[in-house]
Length: 394
Ligand code: PLP
Image (tube, rainbow, N blue to C red; front, side, top):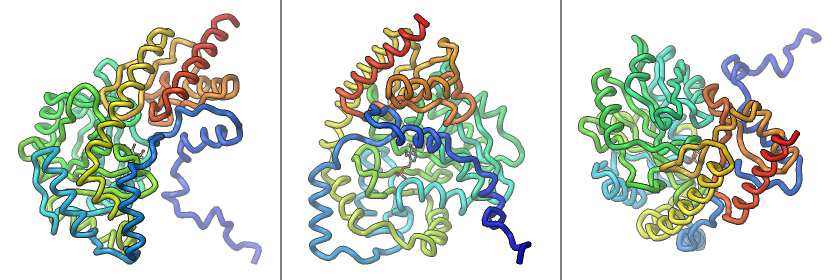
């Protein structure tokens, strides 16, 4: 029996080769310390709006604790359909073109697994949300990172897309407003990307989870472009703008055949999204506009404070148009992103995420999240300034 396989050898090859998330490594360091001010985690600091919690409690009290239809509660799908129509002008049939999922995370995984063939190349722009590359790999696809930089405001350009597209390119994954850079697209960018996707006959996955969180102008959705509804899986969810991360509620809107393909997996793996959460989401989508507006106004205030302080302390930083992140350039300190983040944590108890957690082109940046209270943000900025000053002296 000595030659039995070790537990490690029992792990499947694809998973064995998957790197650990840079964020997870870093947050293990953070968890080992007390009194850390965190600008690290991408999670709203606001409580879920009371009307949403109340609707959820009411649903629980009235026994909404069984499975729902696999696609999601019909009333929620109708609420999603009218919300998406209101925001983008595009209409989805609640019966066949909408799937309620366990967060955008599940929807991403389903879309990749349902729509990629082994060896298909999937383009995504970097710096990117940490799960994109692994989710493509787990689906048997080949991730191709399209680098973006501050010179174009971290907006993916047609020229870069052209360079990265080949015979096997099947899918383009987009995320604007963007985690981790805070970049949002101008209508002209959206039109250009849509034209490219149409010309190359690409399937597009558009992760618009931060679509409600833009600060200088309205979000321009990819699906509102001519000919895009037919080739796009539009992803959105309740986690960010409605502050409902723990509800685990997202949704995908797409042509019926694509929803059916995703549903084939979802019906066996998840069955349905949590029913009480679906009840809360109905309330959020039908009556939560004011709650979103007041959180957005506060994020805007925090963004302005954080951005002007970074500039004043000599850390150049693109002013984010959306989401709740910004990435100051720390490359001129002589430290790598990781060194900067680790030393800032160890010397000043402030957590920021090294830009390299979001891809190699994140080197020289750190991601700071402004979904933290203004007091925490101000205190963290004081400490960062003191850290920079002590660096100059030493
Ligand atoms: N997509 C992006 C760009 C994100 O930033 C996140 C979470 O941080 C997700 C998807 C996952 O969201 P959910 O909570 O809906 O699974």
